[in-house]
Amino acid sequence: MPTLIAGIRDAGISPDAAPDDPVAWFPSTESFARLLTADNRTMLRLIAERSPGSLDELVELTGRAKSNLSRSLSTLASYGIVRMERHGRKVIPTVVYDRIELILPLTGRATPDAASFGDQA
Image (tube, rainbow, N blue to C red; front, side, top):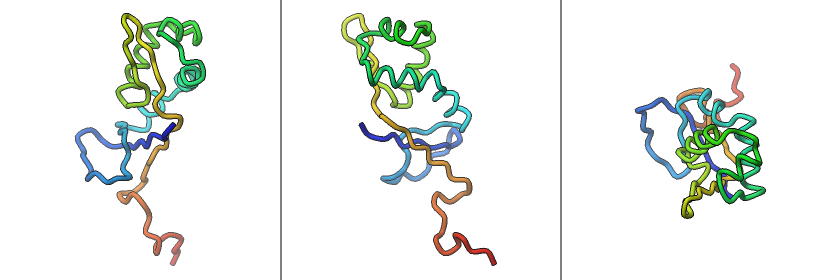
């Protein structure tokens, strides 16, 4: 499975797109952390390993309430982390990525200038 490249940016800011830019944008590091809780990571692992055939089966695997799972899966789907496929009356979740890399520049530049990196005059 491929790796999802995620970034952080304020709403309304649209950086110039480059081939190596993040695919998914989160509004804050807090929102990233709230989405990728231990429970949600466990749920993603169970989906990838067990391939549940429905949300009801996923409820049984995780022990979480169906409404809670649906809300989490909907948010994960909005970031492209999972795909929700309808098969008749069943909704089957599928994990799209097996890992996420967060690009989090601490200054205005995405990558440090090699000449200034480590310079301490």
